[in-house]
Image (tube, rainbow, N blue to C red; front, side, top):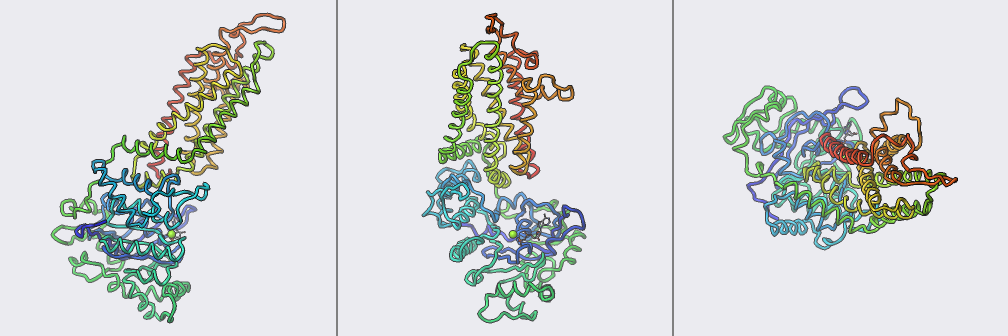
Length: 629
Ligand SMILES: Nc1ncnc2c1ncn2[C@@H]1O[C@H](COP(=O)(O)OP(=O)(O)O)[C@@H](O)[C@H]1O
Ligand SMILES: [Mg+2]
């Protein structure tokens, strides 16, 4: 893959601070304390530090990832204040955790990314060439047709190292000029870690700017670093070319013993607070020379990087300086006002790929269908579940009589039982399904790979036929085994009511899952909601207390049950023990009869189905907006 030299992008940061307000109250926490450095084109910056030193935080801030805190200081792109939207188009951030769809092959995963991230207008052959290029770059050609898999799902797949490469590959399809990676080698054995580093270094040499955090690198890996940043408690113990790190520690009074991996030495020195202060002081004193901020400083007439205070002063005063003919205004507030648009390099203004909504939906639908195709057992298990439950109900209430004494109460309870099954089964399935997709949807929609609405549309489109098939099978078996009124019209009403009911339950499950941050809460919420709605159908309690009376009117169970009971009883006759003929309509309990006919109740159920679906959609959009998916 090639990157034009003129598209080179350098990211520099000065006096970068990051402050969060702790949840439990108390003073604000400064997680990054005035960091300065540069991610250069064609080079690889490695950020190291003990766990909790702030590596991920720094990457989040540099990559412009969502964070909840206050950023201070400057981030500059090619010497100009970073404009986040444009920057996100030319940069990629590979987070530490691989979130991949298990049931896709390596090639499919990268192709999906290409289809969604590259402009729709790009010819298919070109997209395919991109995918081939990425597979070659990431050395994934050998396993391109292997399933990604997931150990947790007991699905065999590619190795951990290959998973990391797929995660990087997915980001590479858009050919980012800047690549951020959070611990790309963690969890890999040393050989795979070295080979991953080699790959990343090759990408850097191809003209990209690579910035990665790293934990416990071995000496082969440290030998590949171009630039190095050592963090300790949010401060920089070192920032500059890798070659200067050992000298800095030596000049601070901590020479690296011979035959020792310098990074081990650094970390062991930094374990001591006093030694840390000494190194940081030494680094701060040497900073301008080491950080060596590039050309952007030339215009200011000051050599090298500046301390935090100097930078803030410049920022607050809105100092204007000239660089390459374009007027620049310093200071975070004034950034958006500068005139970068016309003078910025082409790369920074790269066109955002425009993939139409319908295309996004189609790509996602194909992926969802493929997911089912690859997990036939999942689909089969669900089908068997509905089949067994239908047979169970059928056998329990097999061929009900038309006697007033037994046939009537058993009809009422069997219909109620059918609804109980169709409220819990689909809703729990929907909840579990969301749980398995949540992280993937979060990552992908967070990156703007597709709109949440496209995911929702694809989900609806692919799930609908399956749901209808399942429910209709369930309805046919239960209807004829139980022996409800042998009448085509009534049968079709029953099928339609059950289908609407099942879809509402499914949506309710999704809704509860969307409203909660984890599945444990979702189960609690869903169970509570269903039990409450179920209580007030007129079957479990006849004299509903007035303060709960309103629930009945909000319950899709109430409308569906009333419609089903009326559909079954009205216009049919039953016989009492003394052979007295009783019209079915007289046998509908008044608590069940809500005063609406079959049609009106059906319409109400339909309305609630649509309303629930819309609510779930809105909640998805809101959660996406709030970054809470
Ligand atoms: N939102 C937050 N609120 C409070 N503390 C945080 C928050 N995010 C990170 N931290 C803390 O900041 C420090 C740096 O975290 P992180 O950047 O994840 O470290 P690293 O990636 O180097 O292991 C840790 O001590 C962590 O507990
Ligand atoms: Mg981290």
